[in-house]
Length: 165
Image (tube, rainbow, N blue to C red):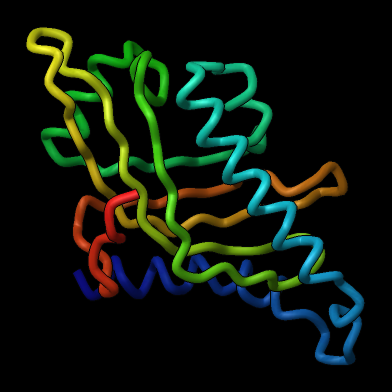
């Protein structure tokens, strides 16, 4: 386990080094408020694309090189099976609550938070609720911020689950 953790940390070092900037203030010119507003809009568009079951719109919010890891628990696997290859089943809704969003420079940002996915059980019609804690990496290659990486866990975040929306 320690070896896997060390390898993971070493694998992230080039990304962290590239995000850190040169230290000469070159990254200070970024308009952080505008970048935050753009990421807020991306989050809202993501929620809408899921609720509208608009896979082309959802795909436009994600970089072509994206790697997204949903939780691997049994309830998440059941939802994935129901979705038939899509990220969410038809009729699903997602509510995303960011806890921390950091704009590192003009190209990289990250966000940590929690989300709640709801969808109807196809057999009973009962609402199924799934929660996750996530870490997202956003990338802006000149065409706006896009989701580049996601790692999500079914474990409760340190802040606890957000209050009901």
